[in-house]
Length: 144
Image 1 (tube, one colour):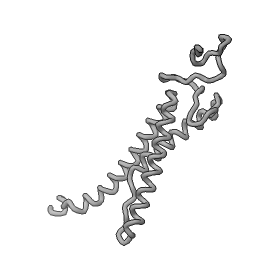
Image 2: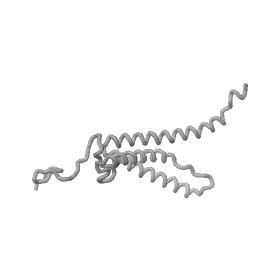
Image 3: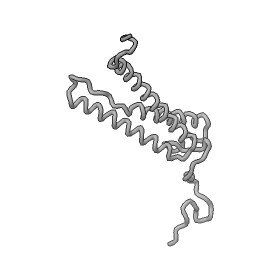
């Protein structure tokens, strides 16, 4: 028995299934992570943009694993690092699924979130490294 092409009904009408975009598009009519969300509502779309931005930023911030403090049991330190890593991977997959909506606004929010998270991490790393660098290098003015 011949099957009708996907998306069409035997009577020639279209089914009530929503078509997914396979290229980037601009607009609030997107499905992000959950069916029916943001539901073609501008306020909910803005919330989705902020949510994806936050997820991307959190993924970058969590890329620095917590240091295991001396005196901590080895298994506790390893479990802490593994837990943070698993949480970061889960957030990363949620970001990936959001981008797969092919909505340009979601894509821009994701890239901006990753960029801000990277900036926060690198700024913090440089600020921590500067005092240590200043302590180890001799000051030329003190010799004059």
